Amino acid sequence: MTHEADVPRPAGKKLQSLFPIFAIVVVDTASAGLILPLLPFYAQDFGATPLTIGFLFASFAICEFLAGPILGNASDRSGRKRLLLISQIGTCASFLLLAVSPNLFVVFLARILGGLSAGNVAIAIAYVADRSEAKVRRQAIGFVSAAMGLGTMVGPALGGTLAPFGLAIPFLVAAGLSLASIVATSTLLPADDRASRIRFDSHVFRKRKRLANQARCAKEVLKNNANGAAKFSLTKLYREITDLIALPNAKALLTALAILYLAFSLFASQLALVLQARYQWDGEPFGPTEIGLLFTVAGATNILVQVVVVRAIRKTFHERTLAAASFALLAVGFALIGFGDTIAGLAVGVFTAASGLALARPTLVAALTLIVPAGSQGVAMGMAQSLASLINIIGPIAGGFLIKQQNYIGWASVLVALALTGLAAVGLLSLFPEKSDPTER
Image (cartoon, rainbow, N blue to C red; front, side, top):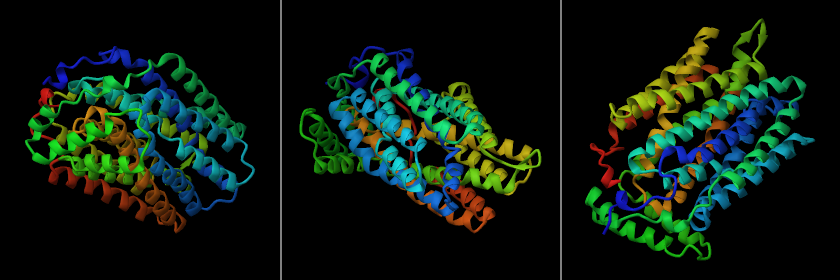
């Protein structure tokens, strides 16, 4: 029986070979980032209240929650590239529908379509997990996060620049970027061989935790993945998800991710309205241009943390330390943004919160990829994305209720409390093994 480290990887073993997927993620997130800061203002033009805007974000999340595991499972069976293209086509269509929306109802329809198609990033992460060695997987996923940060930096800046020409224009540009991503995926991304992804070794998996139930989980997962041409079954998908959740540390990691996602959804969905109400620039309330600039700062921070900071400290600090530091940074950043009232404090708060988010997500997601079988990375990432979507149903609605009441301090207090809860969870839960042995990954 061979170890995972001994099994040949697909072509492109080094991180440089993953450049096409990184470029695709940049374009995908740039198109999404282009519309995110503008969507609340666009909905307001159709008469939406803060609570209605919360439901608008939640409608996207509900559909993403339903579609995530299905898209992930389909990518495990049929290949990442094919499902990535399907996801991107749906996203492009949703942007076009947004641009031509005559009323709020059509805006909701566009976001529903976008949610049903929102599997591109999860599939991209699964693709990277398939093609990176366990010992560098966190770094590889960190580069994906940096690519997301670059897209998040470019998109809002472009959206803020285009907003004065009409809020529909950025949505058309987002559709154009999404179309470019479709072309890039079709021409640049190598087709993935499903057989090359099933390299999980049940002996190594049993040795890693020495738990009897893990052998059963491994056997079931391999059995479920043995026939890639099998007809899709919701029952089989449900069984595979429950087997993955039963793996040691899976519940703890998903708990930490749930806290992170809830804090982020509450923060991002209402940030534009909070800043519009509480901050001014040159005597005028914050608008799409200023919000776009702040999102650009957040994206640049993400890149800085992923490309420079994480690479410098990943061999020095334990994963638990990095996860704890990320939640501490989030708590400080949320406090500065929510309780302060100066532009300087806002800038520092955005930088601090963005640093925490940039550190938290790849650390937790990489840990999740290391405890699941290689042949089920798509389901695992789809499950994580669905968790984020489920949380994103709650966060925007709760945030919309608070902002409708103009309870900005309450909004900030909940954010800080969530970050501190995440910090406590990292300290109390056994999220990561005490020693990282690449042969056991």
